[in-house]
Length: 320
Image (cartoon, rainbow, N blue to C red; front, side, top):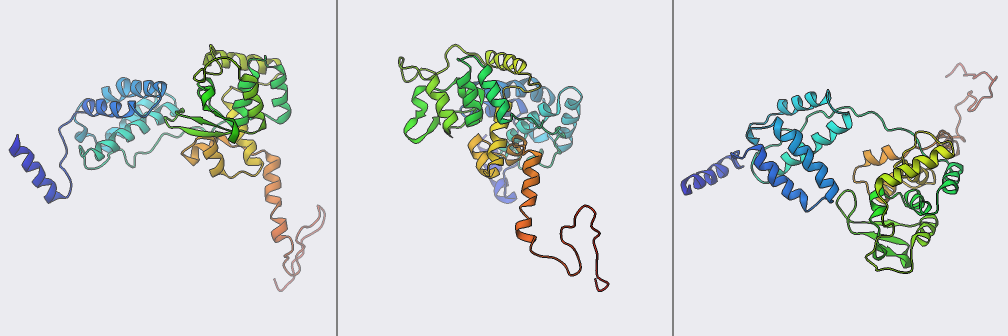
């Protein structure tokens, strides 16, 4: 065993990297899940663990070093006929992460998943609440549900963040929430506006401990059902509770906040994900392009009417 290890060291010096290990995919998957257990929320870990054990391990029964790019592409193709593009993309991202860690752990030299084409995911729905719709939703909501809606649309919080919110997470003096762990497994700061602050004041109870959650006894399913009932009552269709985050992101963008700022406020690491949440209205887009008139409107070409009327011909001089 000692001789084998010394040979491996010498090979690493000669080649510039360690030769592939003998670990099976199952062994690396077990180490990967142990690594992720300390970094994900219990719910996120359960979902990721299920993907690894139910789909990835059965498809890759051999050694990690034997996996080739064509094998991963074959996995994507085979899963594409049985799962949605979003699910396949999630599974592929987990596989890429696992193999990237295998490279860091010097089990394999290169990541075979690098360069594998991801499945094409349909564009997100363009739906968010108008201010009048939001007012109708808040007025139609029961008293216990109004603060939840206010935090979702006022601060762009995830449903899980709202249900896990404790008194000690509230920093009223600085108008913010200090969340220790969120959906992506990391802590983040949620900044509060007047709508979110008013929602918190309605939800806060004077009694109880600082470690008590604000919305005790409320399940995620109850929130979804309550929101669906409210939407039916005010005749709003095809709007799940999660779209309140879309509403927050879209209106922040239309009020001048940059995409990087909105991504940070909503807890997104990927700007592509942030862009899916932000849907400026046609009127906003029209006004945005018209701002160029303030820059270019003073210029005109010789013999050309810069902004002709609906019946005015555009005349160009012969020299042009």
